[in-house]
Amino acid sequence: MFWQKQAETIGRKTLEAFQLERLQKTVRAVYDKVPFYKNKLNEAGIKPSDIKSLNDIKKLPFSTSDDLRVNYPYGMLAVPRDNVVRLHTSSGTTGKPKALLFTRNDLDNSAQLIARCLVMTGTTKGDVLQNMMTYGLFTGALVMHYGAEKLGVLVIPSGSGNTVRQITLMKDFNTTVIHITPSYALYIGAVLKEKGIDPKKDLQLRRAYMGAEPYTEETRARIENMFGIDVYNSYGLTEMNGPGVGFECAEKNGIHIWEDMFLMEIIDPETGKEVPEGEKGEIVFTTLQREAMPILRYRTRDITRAAAGRCKCGRTHRRISRIIGRSDDMFIVRGVNIFPQQIEQVLMGIRGIAENYQIVLESYDEMTVRVEISKSLYDGNIEHLLELKATVTDRIRGAVMVKPKVELLEPGTLPVSEGKAQRVIDNRTL
Ligand code: ADP
Ligand code: ZN
Image (cartoon, rainbow, N blue to C red):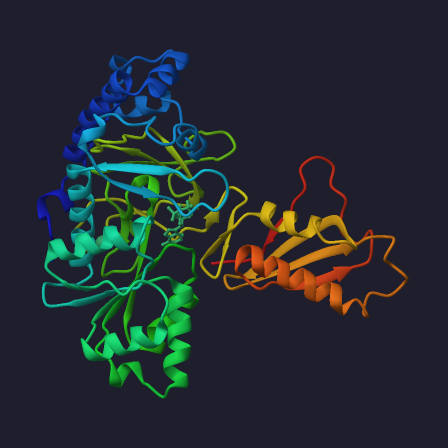
């Protein structure tokens, strides 16, 4: 089943011709309308007319999340302010948010992409979709909401949290599809079990769209078994509309990226050069049909690889593997974005705690903070410092909303770094 069959099964040659035409238009638009990009292109010595082939994209400068922050609120706008009908911001937890602006056409395009994703995974007009993402400034809930409505699905805008009510709604309205983060799905699964509700018998659920944070195949399998459903990986980021950038099809063998909307590159985050086909790298997007805020070569910091070969589903849009992680410092535990600096800030404010610390990640729902105590406090024993340990635990939980496991260490235990310290030890594998 297809929503926009022609666009979804478009031949590669036709697609590439289309991409080139749209890329040229996009570069022209930002050069003419966005002073920030005009300066950037001038600095790089590039004119819109220099883009003669898709390969010429490599001549264009990258855009970063800092560029969006610097140009907050309206600096990246390529249309008159009056044509903007929606604002979203990203969930970034430090500094100024990244603001994304949409025209009516931008919103319509994002809804069409969601409708493609839903149909691709077997959702039809008769389905009932319970949208368990946070409504508000984030893209997650609203973009899915309007896309599902476009398809004609009954949408229950339940938002996240309030688990008892979620369960009641699922039961009473025969919810068939949920849009949810993996950590929340695991939580609801546990609550259902506790209440003696068997989702396989007592609910009508058939599938879940799961994303917003990295998760493993094992987690997918656990959730599928727990609920007796199919779980499809949903990938998106605020800067590219939010959900609907890429989605798994019924084959569940990688995430199709909608390449008529987003030009994708996979680069080596260190060198900025394209990686050989199939190798791991940072995914970079250029918007091809954006009106309000076209973005050139956006550095997502998300690490993935392109999947080889054509997909059996008939769609020609290339696929990527699960997102392996982010190349920058931010990490996600229990669906919460955490920067090492936030933890550092807490630690540094506690008497008896020294500067050296490490954050160790073994799974997506737990973090261990290992920190040295100060020399003045150390008397040859650390076992008795229970109060200090509790303080560290509580303050970190207060700051980042995730309760850490805390290990207090003797002074001098952790490696002393020369240059950039490796604060986050990420041992999570996929
Ligand atoms: P922020 O950039 O502040 O986290 P977003 O809410 O836009 O704000 O989050 C987008 C990010 O979430 C992506 O760049 C990616 O790192 C992560 N993400 C989204 N979907 C998935 C997914 N299916 N698998 C792994 N990570 C995902
Ligand atoms: Zn497919």
